[in-house]
Image 1 (tube, rainbow over the protein chains, first blue to last red):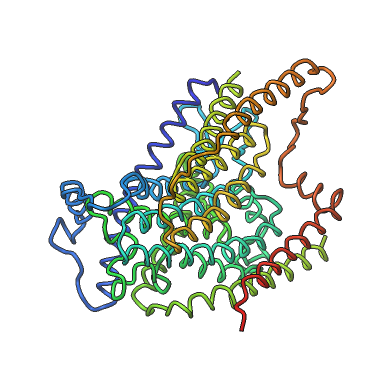
Image 2: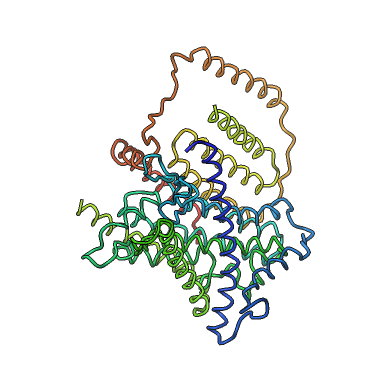
Length: 357
Length: 166
């Protein structure tokens, strides 16, 4: 592949992924409103378009057209920078996520991943520290929340952002450690190789070679830490509306508020993608061998999307079901329960891996 | 060529961040300048082919340690600091001293270029997790473990100093 084709393909992939991601974010908000409504025995939005399907569009137009207020005594540079930082960091993470093996269009083969390339020999490779880039982007994303609260110069915002950053720092540890078990089993930090390692022959002939089965403990630690990391119920104390108005984005309006909102939903999607890749075999699923080539290369993407949808559904389901933690319970749960459990999981897994080697 | 251009860009950002760190009056601006320094250092590591180190630099330094700094500044609600008038001796002696020292180091580096030699990086997975793990847990196991004990002692010292006296 020469440099010109490479750049064209890369731009097409970036535009496509960002478009699909943003549409996904918009429709996740609708899905959430609809599902929570059904859980609470209501209808949810029904007025805009058939079944309320155009509601995200109406919301978007409202956000863009609203007056963009900047309160008087804010730290202006940081106040404007914070939502951009939050959004940018959640967009960066999606760049390393592999959605499927590869696709061939007009004789040009490329990996279904923004940072993945296909070699002329037929092999695929991606960035070999993919997982660490996601963790790094998450940890830089904390600044967006922390600075938003501080620069707003309001007590609700400050309290919300202090809670949020303390919570995110605490649960980042458990989140990182819960993934070590999978890394020990797969022996790689590259997301593509981790998924490929789960494509081996099924255990006992019927159980898929997915890492959720040996790493069931790691999976639940990951799930809980990830919910805390994305500030979702039952860990949504940073924006507990009964105590803090809206938490760190109390003073934000119009598009700046929408950026925080989009960043939160994008983080949810990234977390769901990561859970799919690390524990649920990524794009692996039954693909009919008789289907045309384009269907065969898009079928894995379909399975990937189905698994991600399952996690998004779980997010919303839990939001409709569980109450909020108290703050001291949250901290005690993270430090005294999840963290030791994650360390124990690593020790047991590494003993088993060493014993089998 | 492309690498050199990127190196110069990120090197300049790094130095600019470090200077800005000293010039800013507000602690939070200084802390954020330090984040810029850390992030551009990570990018320089990346240019050297040490991608694992670059990621760890971002996660540990820019992500964890500096977030704690910012957190503490926010918690203490530290305001802008006043600049004290600098001492004259520092201005008269310090600035020429720094210039002389810089020239000296630069001159030695340039004139003894051949004896000093360049840094050679083996192209095969030099900065990958496997190689770093091999160095840390096999070749330099003892220094690595001693460092961790040292950090433990530092933590215990902080606990002793921070404990409330009854």
